[in-house]
Length: 55
Image (cartoon, rainbow, N blue to C red; front, side, top):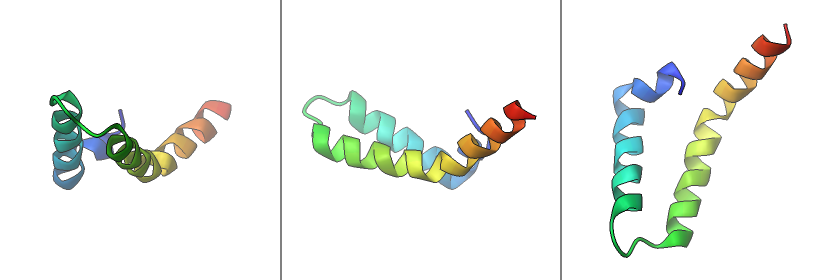
């Protein structure tokens, strides 16, 4: 987990996403679209970590 996850806006979006995923009757396609958005938002952190590991 990156430190940006704990910024208030990111944390609220992540917590809401987890709540929706854990609820009965969630729409898998909607959850996958939302997960893709979360992955896009953290992509720069993953790239930064990969560069740091190569050094």
